[in-house]
Every structure is written in structure tokens, then in C-alpha cells.
Image (cartoon, rainbow, N blue to C red; front, side, top):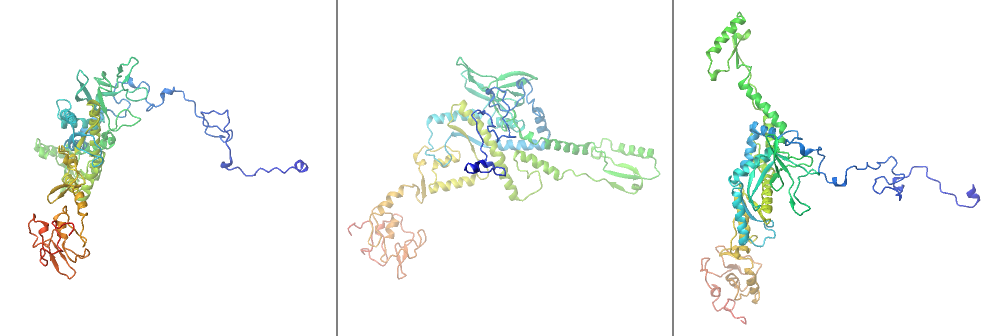
Length: 569
């Protein structure tokens, strides 16, 4: 009432409904905690509030995982893992199917051919030359000679199989770097990865070398070798190459394929034991033979002992029949044989093969050829190729760090069934000028040609390989001189061009006989008659195009134009 009395405008009434969240203005007061989450005076009502203040020092930032305090004090490797190295190896050796799959994958890696080559761009992308200087050739020869016997004694294939064994079973491939007095690598000797305990730093990672306050390099212990249950030797990151393949952020040790199928292997082992007991300790006889009902148990036992005595020492008949009284006396009851292999066995085989990306068709029911080929190709892409890449990364790292050659790499030379098709495709590209000869040889793993012509793209013609730029000047020269009819053979024109320059009523839209046919050198005139340029397709290849005459026109006919015709004719 006072507002109306004083003549003031009436105040706007507040709405009776709640405000929309978009209409709420959150106040960021000057006194609010700048490091907190809740900053408003009203919007944080029943809000998330600020987190508790961290109690760890700032240097803890970046810790890999929440490891137990005093982690390095535990002596046994894999002490905090659910299963140890010994159990993993026992499972891999006990289950024959798993062992066969591991050996199959090792066999596939063993047959792979390899070479050391310069690290270049992708094949066909940015490659300018395949020539290698003397220094690069010497370094390539030295690296290849080293990896022929990486440990100085064992050949590459045997050395690689042992390395893959620790990778597949325990995922703890370990190499000891033996060096000369000058510190140069002279051998890569394998160490049982089950004896290596990993040491972690304050952030849960492998301790790396660093430079001390006095400027001297410090190599802290990164690995411990445990022998006889005691820590025997400390190794730094420079002494040991420890390379697990399947690393997880919350674990220190790798996660091998054998550990991934541990439950399946456990079931399969118990199933095999049951099958073994059937042949060794089975309680169900092969047959039940009835006896007269008047026999007493003592009489049955006496006859049973007599029957068993007859076959003592006869291994072929050691599974003896049993005599029972009752209605079965009139006939022999054959017991039912248990199923020794069913779909469950195939399922176990599929899981094991899938863990190692090995085709399972050898262990399952028959399948058509297309499905088998598809599974083989898929297994190679999913299993063999990643394994090859793992070995390549390991070798490339050794080449770069130990041989000071980051420009060199390990290259696998494919040896599968598609090698012939791949070679044919490369040969076709070389003939078209899409690749050079040295690029093709590099793709096949061969040394390049020293001739510079092998680095030039060429096209295969009837007379041999010709550089692709060879026809550029000829075509330009052929266009400089033309005849009134639209064709003129210059001094730089080819015989084919000279032959085409004949014809009084030549029409380019009329059908012509293509070059290379038995009627080469003929075309159809307006009247449907054929003008012969050559007597036959067997004329001399070295014939002068200027000497070509037609059967209807004399040699001095002005319609005939040859290389001998002057420019002002």
C-alpha cells in the first residue's frame, strides 16, 4: 500500500514455481578455496564437497600401482602373483596338447628367414635409391654375423626357440648381456626367467641408470637372481634385457598364454587322468559271465580265482571277466564302453589353440577346405605375425643401442605359399615401370644392383627394358612436322609412324587392323579397298620406312611420305 501511496511502481512478484537450473547463478566468492571443487554458496547444497586433502608428498605423483610396502624385501619371484613360475612350467609340460601347440608355434618361427637391412620408408613410399655405402655394408655384415650365434655358441634357430619358450610359458624372456673390457656387447646369453625377481623403485617401475652428483653414472639394482632360495646376484638395467610381452599396469610380471588358459588346462589334465585310469585302474570289467544260481559265493570265488590264474602274466588278457550268479548265467553281458573323445575334448582343444592363435582343424572334426584355409590365414595374422613383431622389436632395440645402428633393422623374408604370387605381382609392376629393379630385389630380400640403372623405372618392350622417359623426346619431335593430311614422318619418327603416314583418303574414324596381327600395315579406304603398306607381316625388321610402297601407287607418288621427304615438299 505504501508503494501505491507514494506513486512508486509495484514490485514484481516472485514466481511461485522453482527456478530452472539455467536461471541459477553460482557465486564464485573471493574467499572460496581456489583448489577445491565446491565453490558456490547455494549450488553446492548437498553437493559432492571437496575431496580429502592428500597426505602423500607431491613426489608420489606418477606411481604405477599400489604395491605392498617393502615389496623388494620379498625374495621369491612372483610372490604376490596367484601362481608361480614352477606351476606354469609344470602345466605346460604335463598337458600334451598344450605342449604340442607351443612347439608348433616355435616351429613356425624357426622356419622364418631373416636379414639385416637399412631402415627405410615403407616399400614404394619415398624410396629413392637402394645403393648402400661401404660403412653400412660393413655394419650390416657385423650385425648379421653376431646374430648367427647370439650367445657365441648356439645357432639362431635354437637360441630363438629357447627365448620363445620363456615367452609363451612364463612371459619372462631374459637375456644376459656379456660384454668385453671396453663395454662392447659380445654375447646375449639366456637366463632362466623363473630365477629373476624384478626390483621396483619408489614409483613402481624398473630402476634406471642415472648420473650422480659427482657426474658418475650410477647403475642401481633392477633385477635379482634368486638361487637356492637366496638372492644371489644383482643386475642393473644395463646387464639384463628383461622382455615380458603381455605387461599389465597393476602387475610386475607378465601374463603368459599358458596362464590365460590355466583353468582349461587344469580341467584337461583331470580328464586325461580319468581316461588313463580307465585303462589302468578301471573297476568295470569287460564282460559279466553268469553261473548257475545254485552256486554259493565261495564256489564263485574259487572259480574266479581259477579263471584269473589261467591269465596271470598275459598282458593282452589282463582285463578279466567276472562271474556273477542269477539270470545272467544263461548269457554273457557286455558292459558299455565309455566315450573317450567327444565334443568337450574338441572344445578344450579349441581354447588351447585359440590362446596361441594356432588353427584347430587338426584336433577337431573335419571341416571344408575353405573354412580351414580361412582359419589358417586368420591364425597367422593373429598369432604368428605378432610374435614376429615381438622378436623384431627386441632385435631392433639391441641393434640400435648396442651396435649404435638405429638405421638398421631386422626384416623377415616371407616363406609362405603366397611368395610365388607376391613375386609375380612385383615382376608385373617392374614391367609397367611402377617399381624399379632394386625396389623389387629389396622386397624379395636380395641385395641391390650396383648399377644406377636399377634405380630407374623402366618399361619392358619387345627389345628389352626402356626407361620411361625415353619416349618423351621422340613424341615431341614427331609432333614438330605434320603433313597436310594430318600425318608427317619426321627424322625422329619410328617406323610405325612412317608406315601410318601413307594413305590418300585416310579417315581416323574408320576401323583399322590393330598392330601385331597377321594383317599388319593395312587399313580400309573410303571405297572399302585395302591399301597395303607391306607385302606381308614377315618383312624385314630393318627395312627403311622410306622405302615402303603401296601396290596401287608408284614409288614417286607424292602421297607417299618418308623420312627422305624434304620439309618443303
